[in-house]
Amino acid sequence: MTNKDTELTPVEIEQTLRRLYNNLTSGQDMLKLAEEEYSEAKAHYTVQLAATRIQIKVNARAAGEKMTVQDLDDEALMLCADEYQRLIIAEGMVKAAKSNMTKLLTQADIVRSLGASVREAMRGPQ
Image (cartoon, rainbow, N blue to C red; front, side):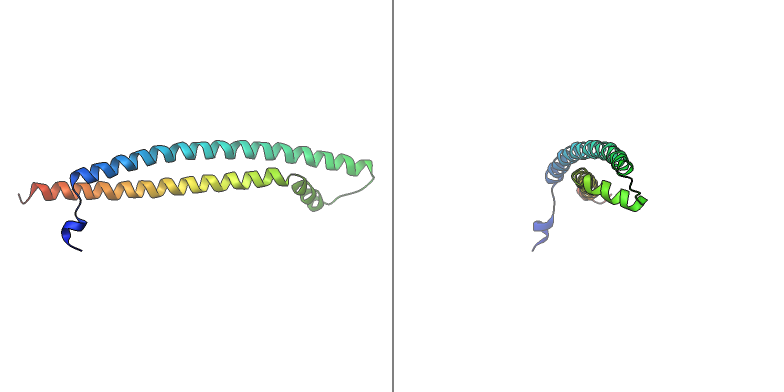
């Protein structure tokens, strides 16, 4: 591989920065959607879990049963498994979107640094 194969032109750097800008914009949109989905899933799960716990307690009292807190929590979680799964998936999507944004920002920093090096090299010795 020659130096010519690894050298970047100002035009290539500009094109790469534009591509990264577009990817960052898209990544921000994806992160916003993921955070909205997470907030919605968390709110839905929290309300559903509370309603389920109340219903379990009412049913247990009507049957004359006493439940431990752990039994109540376990039963409520099992009855809200779909909502919990949606919450965990939404949380994973937020983490993935944040990781993607970090990667893109790092790439942009690298390309900006390369751009500064190319500009300096094009000026030549002073």
